[in-house]
Amino acid sequence: MERIWAPWRVEYVTQPYKVEASCFLCIDNVDEKSALVVAKLEKAFVIMNRYPYSSGHVMVAPKRHVGSIEELEDSEILDMMRLVKMLSSIFRENFGADGLNIGLNIGRAAGAGLEDHIHVHVVPRWFGDTNFMPVIAETKVISEHIRSTYEKLRKIFSEKLR
Image: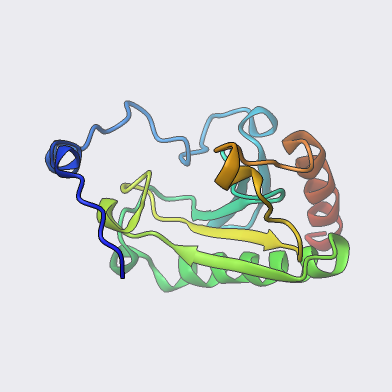
């Protein structure tokens, strides 16, 4: 295994974490369309990721502002997993996804960009959706506009949640 020594990074990894003034996953009193909220159940919701790894990258979060998995109520976990299950089906059947990345980043050290409001990432994947661009040009290509994906998901969820 190669090792890259980057001692200048110690300043970054040891500095205090800056907390945003407001939580983008707290959706009470927000315009859901501009916030890109796709669907809601009683205790959880689906929202588009504004900085996606791939087209269709969404997050499933509890409505309640909760930072750890241990604090979640069983009913919140159940609604979150119901939405993850529905997304899995939607991405395979309606978007032709070949696979899915589903996961949680808990804590800053694990890659959580937002530590105070737990959420599950659901990222549809297709064969051939990665290419030379990230390596050669340090650029990520997202093949569909976020609003197009949002409208498709909203329509499908509105039919499924009737």
